[in-house]
Length: 241
Length: 375
Image 1 (cartoon, chains in turn cyan, purple):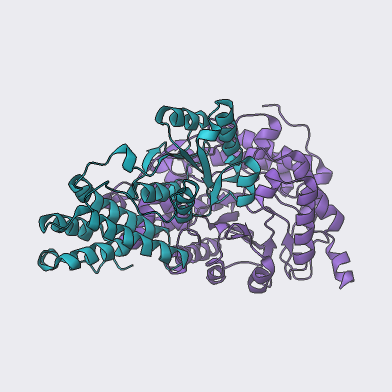
Image 2 (cartoon, helix red, strand yellow):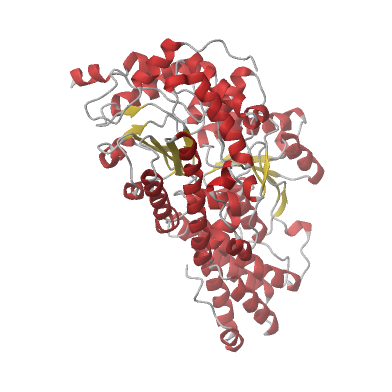
């Protein structure tokens, strides 16, 4: 990723529709938020469908994910690419030709880093991937008191809880959240996915979580899998395509 | 505070005897077991709050000493945390309020590129009189009183990249490492000067000190090897070179926290003494196979083991014993010595029987002489 290779404003204003879409994809891959913003504005100006433009950004994030899995990209590159996608989304989403309806959301996710831990990079990346992909995300932040996960789930009727922790000292908190869900009688209404450096598949199975993910990209895939959305097209809008 | 029963002189002498000296001829005939990074578990052992353990350094030193003695571990005492010196520069630390948390930065000192340019490194005098050293001096003085001739002053010094993280925050540091590299180099040069002054303060008071440092935030899960080298290794190397020249050492503990699968070898450029303990924690999620680590560092310094902290927390005593046994048998003949240790901080809720199993394994199996006879 070389952030110096930015498109100039003049470059962007003179390029074709196809080049705008390709430019968005490349700007996401390059983590170039400034170019993404200008390209998204250009897309709206030349009447490119906002949905198509968003899909170009998501194509870019898919490439970023592949590069991350191949260890060509690391966390800073992911953060910059997510920033670039957000920059485009800010312009494009208000221009989608149909309002986002609750039905268009793929799911509702309560996400947070459990009490005792403040390492939230992975959580923030997963949040970005989910939001970009039309999930409704309720981010409780870091060092979250354990009761807040159940309270927020009940309040929002979320169908996913995503719990993260880097530190092994805070692992017991994850199990307490699952126990709290049982006590509240809502365990069967919500899927629980856990992740973070100190977690493991074995630990997830042991405490009765529904899924475990090694990193944010895997977490995103797992959430789609457990909701049965794997392989389905992302649904930013309900018509017009 | 009248807290401790008298510390056993016999235990102190035994720990001292087992201490690996980095001497190829072998000072110790037994593998020591050191689970340092211990304060949260020590607090649990004493049933005192983490808040007290972290904000009261005299208490922190006393409980770590007593808990080490209780288990028969081969370490004395210590006090410190991961966000030292933040408040000296105007950042804000959040102290733990529960049973699982540790101190963290609530408000970062640096928010803008201009803040980095304007940051002025505090000199040795200023640091010595600041809030962090107010606590550290108490910790060191308490340890000196309790340990007598076994006391060695220590200086816990974050690598420049970890120091930069504490001043700037995770998100900005990671983004700007790629996007604003010149700015981050400016910050790292300042953090390097700060680190040198941190150690100089202890040297000025005691004339000697061991060093505890490492690579925490610059690791293979977050940064590419290229960035690890450019933004961490180069500065860690320079920092250690300067503090050793200033008279620190020879004891150095280099803790490579978390996943260092792609960057641990880069640390071979860092200056070590024979009394250095090199501690490589994980390869991905699993403990690093230290066979390769011993090939690279074994002739230069002592190697620390890395029994998983998850195993300590969730495993059975038998599982802990078996893993400790595996590591002892595999690594105890490292040329300059091997210390059985954990991958990171011992979790507060670790069952005491698992710590006992860890120590028991070293006593049952960790005789270097007998291992040599077996070959």
